[in-house]
Image 1 (tube, rainbow, N blue to C red):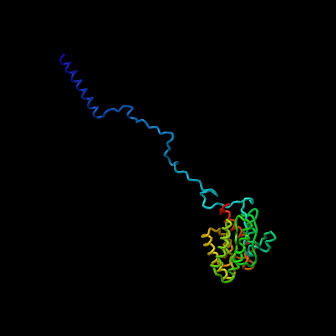
Image 2: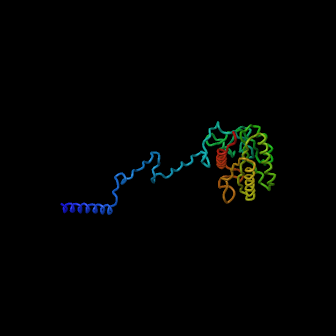
Image 3: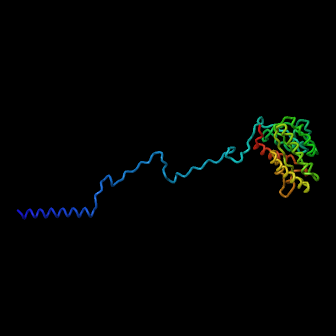
Length: 270
């Protein structure tokens, strides 16, 4: 009996020691819930972080929008165009007496009043052949009496045929500006075309430089009608003048296009 009890006790002790050794070797047994951590759900509103989440580019500015640096000129219905009166010399008058109430193709602004491609309505012409800026300035009030929405001046070509006092010449442009201001009418001034004579052409360039500076200072609309006529080497582009002084009808249309492009982009407070 004693031997049996001793044998059972030894067996029990052996089993206890065996269990302890297994526990030390394998470590504690993790529970099922601890072995697989629960995933945290992503809210439906959270964006997915993938390569497709790059910022969407903004749309390009459309023509005429506030984001566009330069609006594209568009057709303006005739009834919505400002009424313009034209003041100047033979380049403005053309080959027809303005008192007849017509404008012909030899007037530089012929295309500017065209029903399809134009930008203004014709309100009258005050112009005469061979006149200088002194005479043109004297006619400013007659032109403004025609009640235009804008006064457009093309003058100075006859002044630069000889030596000229630039200060005096510009003072006549200022007289026209003062008269237009008195009527509350916007003023636009054209640059003068090239000349075949190199000395007269140099004076044309000097006058145009003075006009650009003066127009910027005085808030006058500058219509650079001369730029597309000029040959980079000096004088007229080939075929644009038959006499070295006046534009051909084809050149006049080019002048009109240059003026129209500027006028369409220039608010005049109407």
